Length: 104
Image (cartoon, rainbow, N blue to C red; front, side):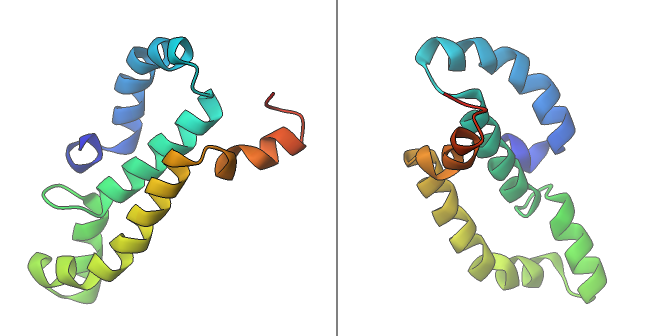
């Protein structure tokens, strides 16, 4: 939701200091949280009403916002499926940092 209304840098600057203590208290890995948050914000950039990438795509393609939104729906579905998979199965994002010894 936040990614639809704020730019990613502003969202990260506002939300991470607020959510990080909660994330650590609950036992969620900060690397996993960062990946999930980044993917969420990226999807928000493609969403109306204020998705910045949506407006850029519409301008480049010389299409209306409505038509561009309909054109990106097939691309949003795999992104949302990936988000659900990454959120529900943390090992998808943590296997490489664990292999490198960066995360326990």
